[in-house]
Image (cartoon, rainbow, N blue to C red):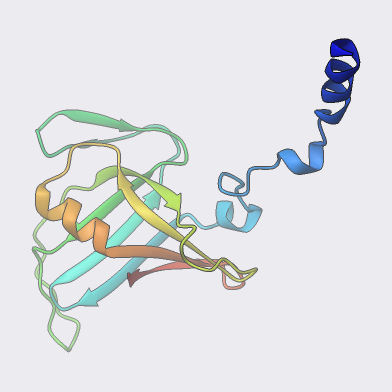
Length: 151
């Protein structure tokens, strides 16, 4: 009897490749085409990012040199420079940090839009961490562009 139950369990646990797809980690081809984003959210805040090819480096909040792996992002949170309504901005250099963009499953994902959280990989300041937590990157797949939006 135990052998029959074991065989029943064995056959009922067969794998179905269609069910094994993990939608959370599935990357859409259109998202891979988007290589950068830049959104001025206010006269005192700009959030921008560039997809890494794997040979980029930056300096983190502790002063250490950090490499950016392929498909990670160099993200700049510029809350230092200010811009006027005429588009004239100060030009103080702001150092980017390395981040992953993690799909946000709490926001409805459609065929046209996906949303990602900015997840710092390198050391950031508390202010950068707080700002990164307040915004999402919205990929607009039809237009092959990405913009930053408030949560």
